[in-house]
Length: 273
Image 1 (tube, rainbow, N blue to C red):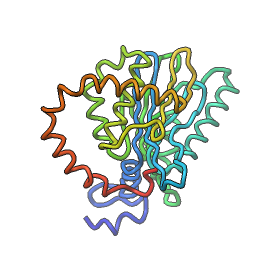
Image 2: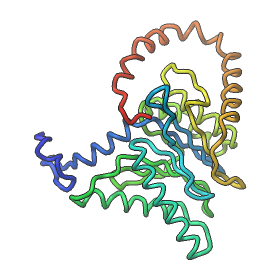
Image 3: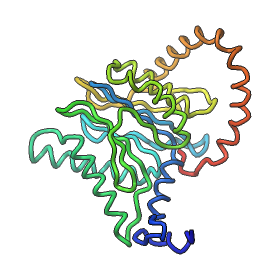
Image 4: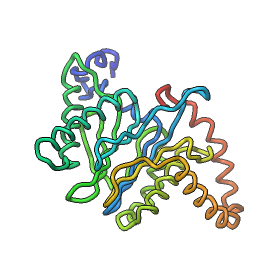
């Protein structure tokens, strides 16, 4: 409805009650490479897809360590994600210096949401075009939050953002009831399987995904490629053993999926890196 008249300024409402520039920022998150988070009572796992612009370039980093007990995974504009992760590090350092204790995850998420929301009410600013999955552990347990460019934030048991994340959400929705009691290794396995759902036929390898873990007795860290590849190989062996019985029944579905596959990749965005 007369969109071009109302999307030039972030502070201008359309007659339908919409802020189009905020919606554009949320669309940037949908176009970014996929990021996934899962949590149990004791651990949180983050995983993301690494996409390079070309075979000659390296991929952009999508998971950042904020503090020993907090980390983030991003989808959308990587530059905005780096700015916000640097802000989060500063807040954690300042709180630790003042109170000699780790910053609670929920408080950091609120401060981050407030910072993002200011950009939706200042005409000389633009919304951050990045979504953040914030994983952390504090005295109240393990937490997983999603921060939206609009300034909203939500706590989840498991969530996926980015390009083709709906396939990962479908997988997580089938499995999420078991996550609260899952072990660390089971969470990592489910994260990798969810990441594979977003690849649409592409082989899952450690070179195209990153996995990070934080939990009880384990500070936030990113798993090295060798460890991730060993886990992927172990899952593939299990599936190969179970696979032959299911292949004849799945034939027609695989054909239809193959027909749909190329069309879904046509909308790949330049920031899907």
